[in-house]
Image (cartoon, rainbow, N blue to C red; front, side):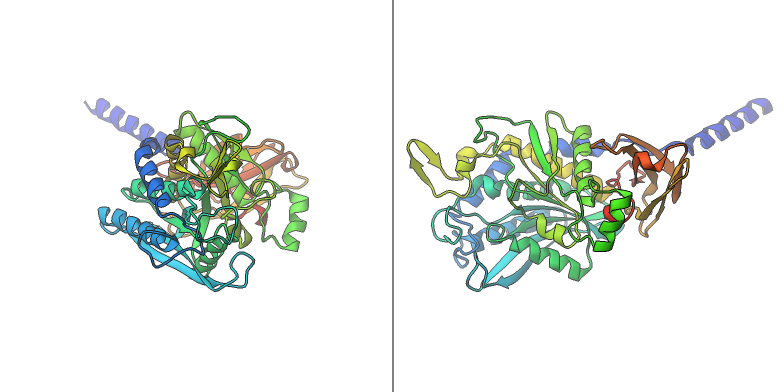
Length: 452
């Protein structure tokens, strides 16, 4: 009996010792549930409600309860409040606004009002990830605030997706905070995003990523292609607020395609590849479409990582058009161009990204790489506070020509790692933080070029 007891004790000791060498889970099981919860019917109904306000132009009616951008933003506010009531007051719903005037598309004093619903994190509440849609719409004349402007796909779809994500994720709790945002003034010059970005900086919010959803429900393009299984993710390659000294350092150490926004886009793709089916994520290595802009850009300008998520095949007859029929062609952004099943897919992509980032530990801080004229490369980083859910860190590497991270290894609760016999000249390196449940941050590239 003594021998059996000793053997059992030794076996337990081996098991315990072995368990200490195990990494965290590689999958977060709840994200498979999140991925299938967005409802096409609810999204369709919300798009229809927004369309039924007639116009949501930034310069439109604000006093009516049934027409114009004022009625639309009050409905969005009330919808967030309803969601909050269902989760015991888990959302803080606020307006963020400023008055704009003297601009080409806002010549007279106009209050540009955005709606934010904030779901505070339990461990690291000042770390945020944001999903946004646009409240406003427009027709051919950017100053026309009176004619009907349904804006069904552009961008009631993105706004409806944001509301739906709030319904789903508000039922859960996360370490970090999530912001669900309805931004105004996009069609007039991206003013809502600028106002909210400035407000976030003034509040000291640490926003680690903005997922800008602009047109997520159209599946048939002007090119004649119908595609409901591909989504585009646009991201800038280098930080917009990079200093001259930082640009000089980047020239000699690399990082031209590793801004935090670019690694946020890679994270979106990896989440989609893992947790979604029948959706291919196309990363586009541009800030936005050729010569055009979106509401992630004002956040990029001040150093907040941001990307654009949108349909793959646009139909220009349904964008920024007066409602009309000419030579048998119908123009206008109406409900006929909405595919709510596709919008639900793209909403799911956002939701699993928000949940993954909010569930992760604090991002690795002050990541630096070294190893010039050495046989091995070395990464060093710091552990920020509020990381009681931290399981450890994962180091990543790839060939410099690879578009995505190809290799990784979990290394535990350390603050440095040496890549034996990997010469720093030939690879790019990065590090991510992993939670005990497997939630993980995007990869942080070394130096100022990649810092979130």
